[in-house]
Image 1 (cartoon, one colour):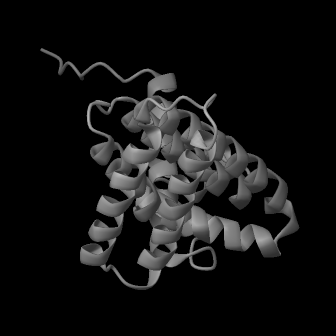
Image 2 (cartoon, one colour):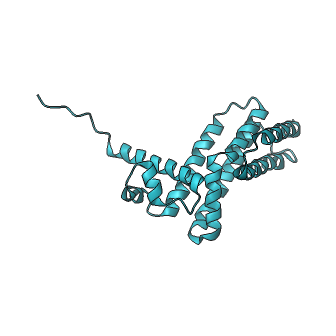
Image 3 (cartoon, one colour):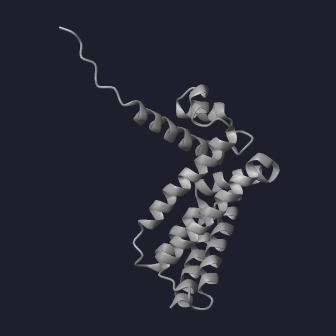
Length: 195
């Protein structure tokens, strides 16, 4: 009697899973080690694949890291869209979380690298503009903000800018207690401004 081997996973599914592992590993490496410490080899090792497999999916380092930040930004956008928009305070806190987590840390390292590396500047600038527009659009929906009213667009953008500033501050120290007070105050201001 022969041994029956389990059915193989289709090549397309294996390829998709490898790509996803590479993207997640790239974001983790970028958030932990910055641009200088995040090489294709380091990412491939963390993802459990060969360097050749990594380069098959992403021919350049820049392509890998730009795709990784975009991938996780999409994941975070989907998570934000799924939030119940019943309480503006929770929405404000969720938006701040977007800018104080590992994705923002990874994106910031990529932005700094793009400021010095010409081949990264275009793709990262385009990605940041797209992610910024999507974050603004999601914030407007979740906050139930009517941007036809004077000052509402600026209020939402101010919230996102404040969240980004808190994300920058979190890079050096995690002052969660102070951040929670700031978020509570902003939630009250946003609620008042949006009626």
